[in-house]
Image (cartoon, rainbow over all chains, first blue to last red; front, top):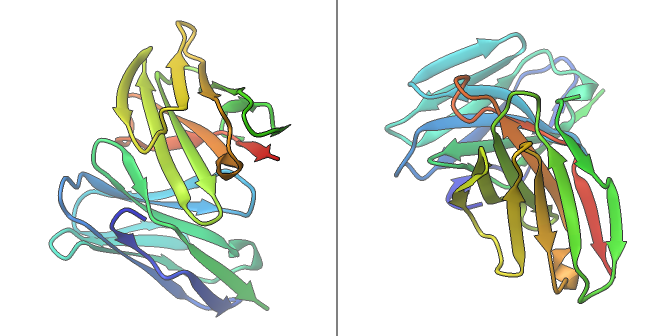
Length: 107
Length: 114
C-alpha cells in the first residue's frame, strides 16, 4: 500500500484491548489518519495525528511518532461491532491508504 | 450517513463499454476525491477536484477521466472497461478549514465488468 505497512489480520476477544500498528514512509508527511471500514461499506473517519503523541477519543486512541514513521490505533473495551478493517493513511497532498488491517472480535 | 451521495449503487456492464459514476459532495464541501477499491489493492486514490479544478492525480488510468461541475457534483468516466476494473468506487468530500483532508466518504458504486 504505497509504503504503508499494517498487519493484514488480527483477532481479539470482546472486552479486550487491541493495538494496530502502522509504519509509513516519512517523506512529504503532513499527517496520519485512521479510518474504520465495515465490509462493503464506506470508510469512516476515526482519528487524525499531525504532532507526536497520543490522541484519545473515547474507546479509540491513536499515537504518532513522526521521527520513527510509526503510528498505532488502540481500541479498548472491544465490542463485536468493532469487527471491521482499520485503514491507516498518510497525508501528503493527498491521502495514501495502507491495505488495512482486518480485525475480528470474538465473544 | 455522511451526506455524500453516489449513484448508481450497483453497475453491471461488459468489457469494452463505458460508464459514468456520479457523486454529490456534502453541502458546503468544495473538494471531491475519487478512490478505487479492489480486493487485492486496497483503497487507491484516483483524482482530486477542488471547486471545479483538478488538484491532484493518483494512479488513474488514461481510460478514466473525471470532472467537477459548477454545482460541485462530480462524475467519473470509465471507458474501454476491462475485467480488472471491477471494484468499489468511492467518492469523498472534505470541508475547507476543518481537519486537513478529513474526508467523508459516500456509500460507493460497485462496478462489475463481465
